[in-house]
Amino acid sequence: MTIGVLQMELSVIDAMSLKDKRRVIKGLKDRIAHAHNVSIAEVGALDERRRSVLGLAMVGNDTRYVHGALSRIVEMVRSIPLVGLEDYRIDLL
Figure: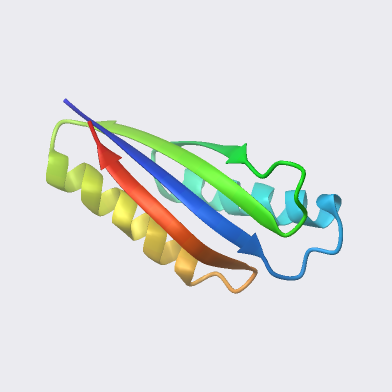
């Protein structure tokens, strides 16, 4: 059994308020959860209007599959113009 953890630091480009940021982040979380079978939550920078830290977790039998799925999520986030991917980290346990 492999547990994959992905942490992404994001910039929310056009957020003028926390409400704007939360709308963008909620949409992103919903989009990721719909496309991939992962648990996802905002885990940092909760009160900063232009920054967010998302944490994702996934469990699987195959290490390569879990790493590949998390890498595809990173690429998906990179393609979304409303957020900028500042940094990310994938850990496999």
